[in-house]
Structure formats: C-alpha cells, structure tokens
Length: 247
Image 1 (cartoon, rainbow, N blue to C red):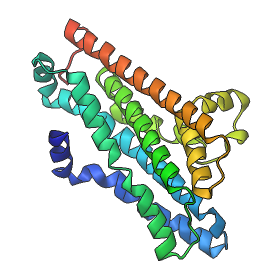
Image 2 (cartoon, rainbow, N blue to C red; image 1 turned 180 degrees about the vertical axis):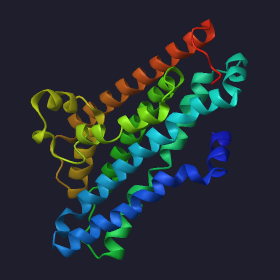
Image 3 (cartoon, one colour; image 1 turned 135 degrees about the horizontal axis):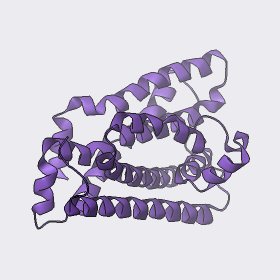
C-alpha cells in the first residue's frame, strides 16, 4: 500500500481523470441551474462521481500490472516469496479508493458554488454504498489488469470499456430504455445496482435496503472472484512461458 501510494503521488498525471470530472460537473450544474432543474443536482453529482470512479479504474488502476510488465519488475515480483496477486489486489484497491472523495467534492461544488439543492438524507447508507461500488470498480480494474498482459492494444481496450459500461450502469440513460437483452445484462451488473441505490439513499427513499444491499454485495463479491481468477490464470500462463512479458 505504501509503495503504491508513493508511485501515485510521484506521478501527478495519474490523477488527471479525477481532476477532469469536476470540470465536467461545472457544465452539468450550470445547465441545471440555467434551466431551473435543481432537483436533478444530486443525481448529477452521483453520476459524475460514478463516471469518475470508473474512468479512474479503467485508465489508471488497471495499468498496474502492465506497468510492471513494461518496466521489467513483473518478472522479479513473480520470483519473490510474497504473493504477487495479493500485492496487486491491494495496489488496485488503494488506487481506486482515491476516487471516493470525488463524491463529497461533487456535493460541495453543486451546493456551494451553484447553490443547488443537493441533499443526502441517509449519509451512512450513501457512504456504505459508495465504498461497495468502489470495491466493485477495483475488482473490475483487477480483472482488466490481467487482460493488459494478454492484450497489447491496451489503450483501445480501455477506451472500449468506458461509455458502453456507462450505459449498462444506467449512468447516461435509464436502464428501462435499453434493448431487452442489454437490460438483462445491466440488471446483473453491480454498477447499475450501486448507482440506483446511491440515488435512493441520497433521496432518503430506499425500499428493501437490506435485500438490495445483499444483492449489491453478492455482485461485488462475484466481480472480485472473477477478477482474482482472471489474474491468477494469466499469471499461470506467464510462469508457463505462454505469455511474453517484455514488449
């Protein structure tokens, strides 16, 4: 954790995604205020946070193992007695957790800069759901980090995993507007559950909170298991010589 934190703070460009999202929010909040749609301010703030968290994971956290591969340290890490997978998962979670303050930042910008009626009626539940979503996003970044070793066109892969997942997560359009097959996929996606639960928690109207939290935890756990399994399989390929690390 300490090593990853040092690497992040020595490379300020890695925070570019988290710094850009607040500037986007200025446009969104100005639009809401100009059209007297302040009631949508809380939803806009939550959406900006989720998009920023996902982008940060896709473009920064998922590159940890690929950076190790390019720099030649992955070879050495796999030879050490410590468990590289555990270290990688910890580094990914640390990186993704940096997006959590963006949620509070969005609320402050909307309320104190634009004077919009942003409210959070259930702050405890809101923070809990935000942490769960961040964990799921970190698990997704872990899964992607394994794919980074297998796929050389890393930037193309990263670009392909942004806006399509914004749609599946219900961040751009309501899930009900998606075609029926995609609607089923979206209902099995942890981000769509987390996004809706965040909106309801902020509004103070959360029907069946226990059941919905249970589903979200299960989907996040499934995502984490898939991410761990993927990286473990890729590392097995690496040790067997079926994947070339240098490149």
